[in-house]
Length: 161
Image (cartoon, rainbow, N blue to C red; front, side, top):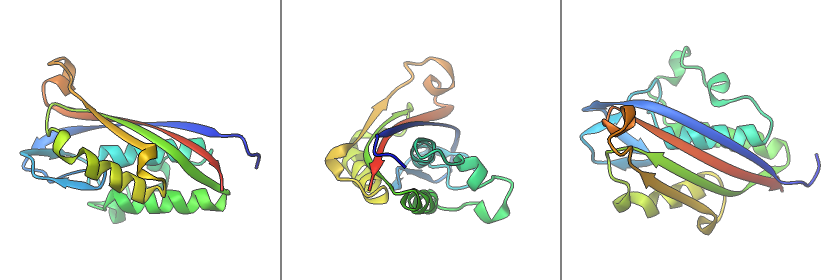
């Protein structure tokens, strides 16, 4: 493995439904709506895992944790991050930085943004000052703007251990 940096991108979209639990970037939200998913539906962690796995040249999240496998039903997405990091370590790689955008009308991220950054930093073993997360609305356009869905996009930069 060479010492050149590697970059990966992950994107995840989930429908929103009233009454569903809402966990984003591993942080529970008290929200009227939550993401629908086979696991806990944490779009931020799903996109983060795909960004890290892609940068490492590994299979994507859906290949590793199929939604056809009943063992993944309701599973905490933080467990996916732990496995992604284990695989990264096997390849002699580490996360250098991570940048995330979550597009959603609700819930609002501002009150939880620092906790989300801290949780991402913890799960991906990177200093919190190398992790960022931004919230964007859909400006009332498409499923995101109508409050029907959310989309997370994460870019991860990796380097050798």
